[in-house]
Image 1 (cartoon, rainbow, N blue to C red):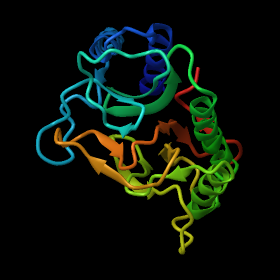
Image 2 (tube, rainbow, N blue to C red; image 1 turned 45 degrees about the horizontal axis):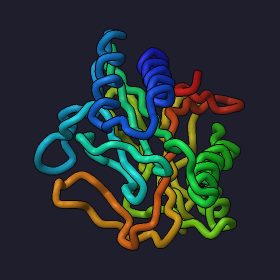
Image 3 (spheres, rainbow, N blue to C red; image 1 turned 180 degrees about the vertical axis):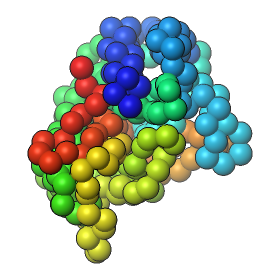
Length: 240
């Protein structure tokens, strides 16, 4: 999993270097897929099925009001956009998974704040990723932090365990829970991924059956890493 996660992290570095006004999201997809395959891995998302047809691209590219699962196309990024890129890699029977939201060119301060708060909410959750802590603690930490800035957590989608399969138990919501949830154990590997909107939490899925957008058209951001639970500080596998 360290190998898969390292490939994901390096692919994100490539994305950051190539994101600019005028580039088509399909071009980003091609760059990512070429690199993942050059490392002996395959894209985890390509052909992945949730319902119906498999996902038709190597990475998810979601722009502005698109929350997750955006399909790469000939659409070109514009100055002031924000773009969320979710990447998975599969090698030697294990997956790695991480997402980032990037500014395109010069973005408005409120959009940059959304990106920054979403990222920091992940690190707020890290405080509670310890052997023996309960899942609800990290869930509440994300929502509590996001709400301070007037932002909202998406509820219909959540984080997850990860390993031989892309999505494994436990499911990891990012809002306060009534139950304590499972106790975290040393050796668990989790994909922790707050999805945050600048407006209301309501979402809808477009006719492509994949792209999730905010109903009110407000921007959304996404930040994710693959995490190993240890006796002490969590080990973030998808950061280099």
